[in-house]
Length: 360
Image 1: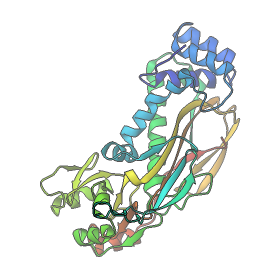
Image 2: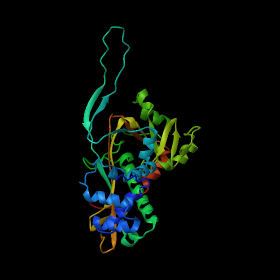
Image 3: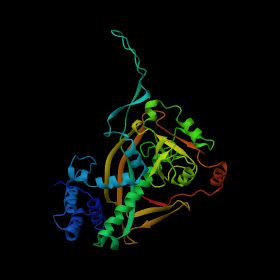
Image 4: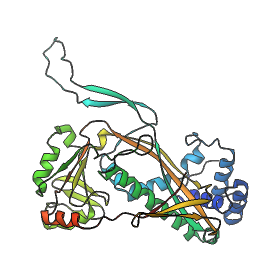
């Protein structure tokens, strides 16, 4: 049994079958056999889940491959994935011992038959394990039972969009201080500066602590709302800069993220940011009630899935990150635009994304 889920729909269909059958995997397999055939990959996945230990790292190709394409879609959509495509993060296996640099290595010219001088390089040993980034999507049971493939595509779209947004918010929003053993802090959290609304000079100040090797791996991150101003001011030079994909900014590769505050320029050295991943799982939540939060109104409401004739699908992305050096990332606020723009932002009421939540 070796499933290669090249579209991500096998994982979605297996979760959908479980959701409409109250997490009863035997009934879910019967539903899948009726919908997609007894020899389908969906049935193979559900059969494997019936005998699985529940570990996220079983070493079995069936469960490892299922959901892999959804991870690829998340990487394409998220700023995190676009940064990784430009300069890869330092990706390591979960729990592996890693030596973080507190001082970079130095080289010296050495005469023949002479002792080589000691390097000034210094290390800090650490281990990092993946944390859970979870999303809960709710649908009516009638919708989940429909035989149309558009149902699977809609669920896949919702999961990819929600996980991508949460991933970027956690990594690039500088006010995210993180929660130990629950959520990693923003890579910018420990290195936030305030600029003078002179982008070139402010960026030089932001990057002045980096050495030549670090500068070669720099990737900038800005808000897509700042792209028109950057183009108007010629900050992209002769290069292409778009709100969706980024491009070139002040001579450096650049990506865009709505999680970056407007008027700011952030930088990352991905090769000096440790990332650990353990894939993505899709399933159904066993909660009969969920708390739906409206962050704009700062209210919440308890919703009974049974009373609403609804079911929930749960996706969990296992990932974590940790900078290896103190200057692996940083952000300069009040950099793009004018002081008047900043005054307008401060005077405007804060807006937040609305989202639902539940214990998982």
